[in-house]
Image (tube, one colour):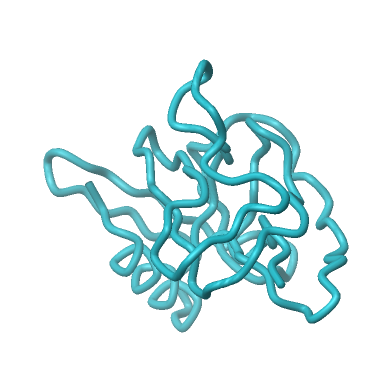
Length: 140
């Protein structure tokens, strides 16, 4: 499984180069990144579901603190469809707490809070495709 830090490094390599695509395979995992045709903040993962990318959601956090998507993928609020969500509005989180899962290339990636605080708003819907750095939760 490709960890988030390694994925971020691959994205940076692609962004900083004249390459249009980057394909990496180690026998178990494979990754295909492609620069978007229009200017954007990050490359798109081609193997994501064939749904249109959602429009960015305006962030309503009073102090501007959010937990953002570290990767492109499908957002899931709970570990399984019949489980309770990891977090909900009003829940206090500590740095390192799992707040959701983002599925990327059939890998389930646990997303952790980067700061202590209280969830004031969930900014995406369960099963929604999210872009790199998209705000997922507003935190105070």
